[in-house]
Image 1: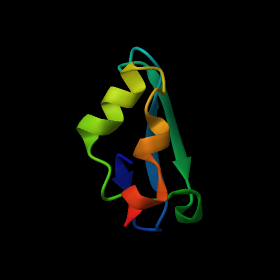
Image 2: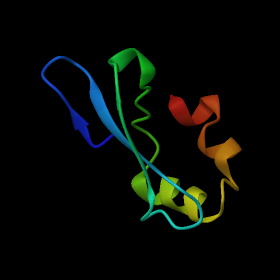
Image 3: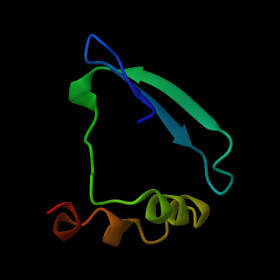
Length: 65
């Protein structure tokens, strides 16, 4: 998520793997976004560069507590 707007919508940048500097920008309503406060930028970037490897552990329910 790169921005939240006054109407509650979000702008979300979705990087592509394995080069996260290219990707897509989406403008979506809040109900389409799940904030994962326990997932660090570093952990997310490692998963992206690894083409999703490790995503299971990253997104496991225990990581969301």
